Image (cartoon, rainbow, N blue to C red):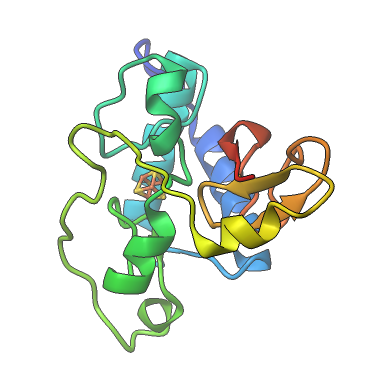
Length: 170
Ligand code: SF4
């Protein structure tokens, strides 16, 4: 299957699907077991990757400016909170284990992304405690993983988000 608009082939979709599935399951994240729906979402991710140069969320309107869209590059900053609260991410690409097992079903969920997308970052008690560390602390904005090192890791060891999804925590 190839279109002039996207040039995304079925082979590319299958390959990315398999990659996301194995990476996710290695870290405790599960793709939606409805393969047809999931592969359509993977196709959307690939189209956005071609269009913008990064995997913008297939269910949201990306600006095309990576700095503006960082929070909605898949896996987005909102995935874990939505999985915890609703057993699915906003697009239903990722679902909880009870959904995979058929113990729960999913429905539509509200958009968690702030309308103005302004992130306020008051210093927490954790931040105050970590500020004594000799190295800067980096936080994965997707899953919250923290590490103290000179710079952010290339890949989050937990959720596999890329380096540019880390922010300086302390
Ligand atoms: S994890 Fe976030 S970015 Fe990825 S498909 Fe789900 S809602 Fe969209």
